Length: 261
Image 1 (cartoon, one colour):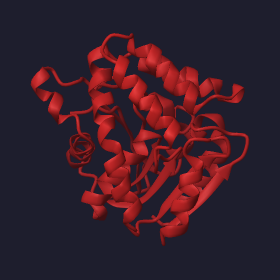
Image 2 (image 1 turned 180 degrees about the horizontal axis):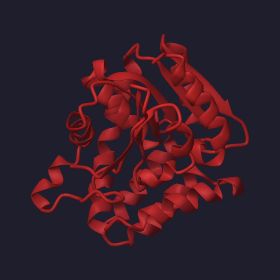
Image 3 (image 1 turned 135 degrees about the vertical axis):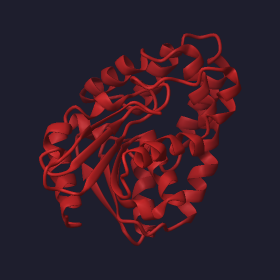
Image 4 (image 1 turned 60 degrees about the horizontal axis):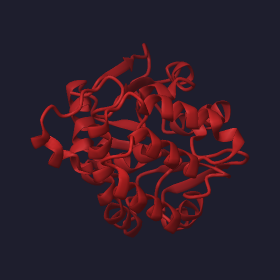
């Protein structure tokens, strides 16, 4: 089972589950925990092979590194904790996992908050994926990871986010990085499905105005989804919860609180 931490609330029955992105860990939410636990029950988890969650022990499990299997990891924790429904907050690749969970278990998702959401891979990102695929087996993975983080978060004010993700990614092993990288080859097909389906679950996209690779496609997506809204934070990059935590926290807490207790 995944490593997880819970912060129970004495009065609230509302659960909020945080899902980090590839290479990160639950520690990327350190600017959210104090504020959110004042209002809700909070669940933080480390995806398989990240943070304090163990990777698959045998190569035979490599084929299980799919979005569906990783999504089931999250559901297993919810079941173990007897959490029937939750609001979900994700960042980057974590938003893809949340949306995938909502496709299979819509009754368990009260709302989705998608920070730095990935809706479509533009040509620049696809070219990076091809480049990485060529070198992933013999170039130190942290070099490739640095390249990806710089492409996604290029500006000077994104440095804190870049450093945070690179620091967490150092906890991975080369083999684990390759497993997740291979899983990334499935993402385009999955994203096409998501774009074609109006899931009708309340969804708040929280995007940085400087999230150059992903913001344009999210703007188009919001217009097509009946239950979606968009908050764009100016002078902010991909990892909005780290770069603008006060605005992120206040807006998202209010958004979730509007659903009632």
